[in-house]
Amino acid sequence: ARGLTVLMDNTWAGPTGFAALSHGVDLSILALTKHVGGHSDVMLGSVTANAEYYPRLRKRSLMLGQQASPDDCALALRGLRTMDVRLRRSSESALTIAEWLQTRDEVSAVLFPLLPGSPGHDLWKRDFTGGCGLMTVIMAGSDAAARDRLVDALTLFGIGYSWGGFESLALGVHPERDRAAMPWPPRGCDPQHPHAVRLWIGLEDPADLIADIEQALAAWRTP
Image 1 (tube, rainbow, N blue to C red):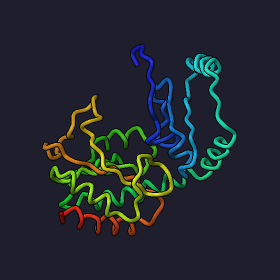
Image 2: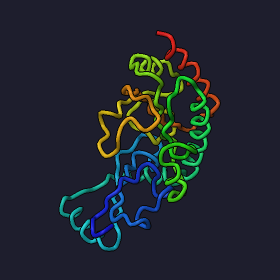
Image 3: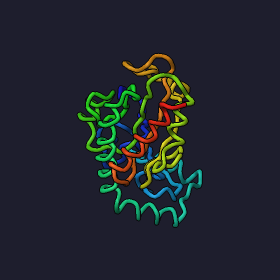
């Protein structure tokens, strides 16, 4: 990386979906609360370093006295045993739902790298071996109240800030407040400060989740 130290948050794809160190990353950071935990009941994270940086990382960790509880480690070990099958199920269900969402008039765009035509799909196809069920749905128009009605009307999706567990979650988000490195809105989306819903697709039947979103879209359309 031209002499630069490269750190990457690899939580989205995880170690099974993107081999960060093999792609030139020096330190790969994971929120183990997500895919590794898998049940939304662990507070844990990890940093993996290449051979050059590992001695420095280990020394600093010992100096700071960082420790993980045995209970959290046991929960992470439990999650690792099923992580691969959970991620495959979540990704497959999410792709089914994303393909359905992009046919809806209420939706301006679906941001999901596994979806052909979505921003980043070509890079995902080239460099990644897996993904997950996290997506952002850009709603048509700029009515924040309508977006909030949609989220409130969902019955199978919990409302939650985190993601990566077995249960599906939804959250109204304001990407224009958080993005700095990339322009917002993305190309092809409504330029009038579009409102978005972030969806995490869990292990439920995708047909049930689609039916839930469909009935919630009625609330989006009706003040």
